[in-house]
Length: 296
Image (cartoon, rainbow, N blue to C red; front, side, top):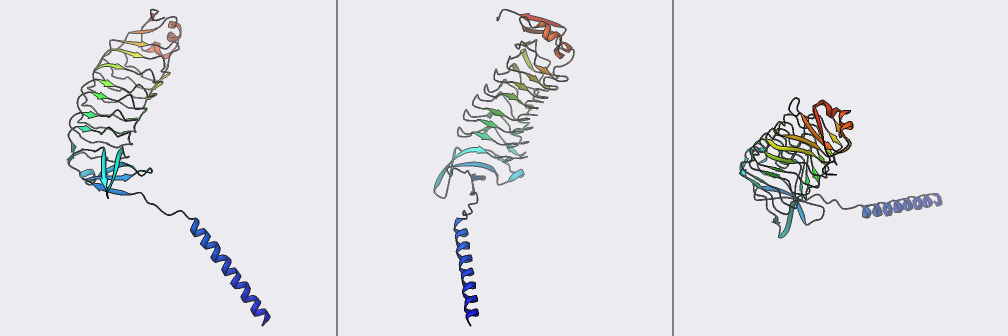
């Protein structure tokens, strides 16, 4: 009898300890809070972690959406107002039937990767001065954009192939003066961009095929002294420049076919740097090297 009572006490004690531990563990588990998704006026949104802003995640019609796209600066849902601050990755991926110009609101700070991948907008593109981030392939092969392409100075990241294949832009190009790299294929096949091309002084690297085929740029091409690397075929078929100027005393690293062959003959370089350029791959593209000592 004593043995049975003792055993019962042990079992009850173990049960009590287990119950207390389980209850404590359960109370310490964070409640599951899934992201809030909602739809207003044919656009899908997701509430960001701050609880006050939202990201546009797509159109209810998906790839079959036929619409003139209007993205608001604020949206209301369940009695609460949210500020629209971002376009999500692949939000309008392959939405070929979206049409009209694209005017993004002044609240947008980020355009995600492939956000407007192969969208055939017709008209201009207005990027707001609030914008900081343009993702990889964000506007890849958006064939219908026309007019100039102005990337505001607020942008600090410009992704690879961001505007690749946007070959109906037929105006000037302004590149943000606060990016450090023009990445692989960023403006490749933008055949009709025209006028003078200014490489910002903040840029240290020009990637492979960065301006491949941009033949309508005119005037001269000036490479700022900040640039240390120019990738393969970076300026292939950029045949409209009247001359090329490099402001770096030490020649930037060049990859194969960085410049078009048999097009440019003269390269202008800083004072006392002819020897360095003559003994570098730059000499393969330019027959004559001239020193500009007036800037010293």
